[in-house]
Length: 118
Image 1: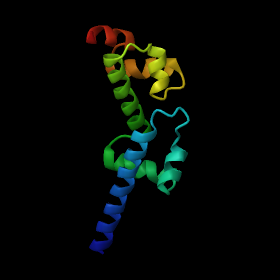
Image 2: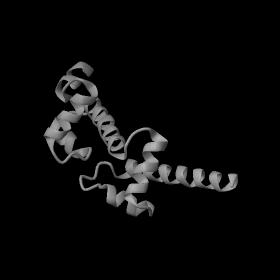
Image 3: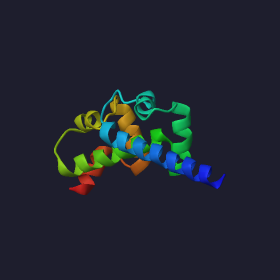
Image 4: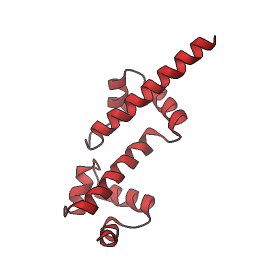
């Protein structure tokens, strides 16, 4: 019985690691979807979402947004791209969604963040 639990735990970790890898490779694709991710890994979206949240403490959507926003910060710090271009580069379809997500996470707008970093 204990061996089955160990196998299950190992399989769950493998799925979560695959999920993280797929997100890191595809987060900038504006068409990136939960369904694409679960198809790539070979399990249902519901199961993937459940095990990811249990293992990582955040949803896949939150994880994707975190990755996108971290990359946006790097681009704001290191480039002169416009904020709109950066939003598109990191996979946000809507500039408004990018602004709201950025402000919610960092407490400031992308423009103000960039000015502070300069």
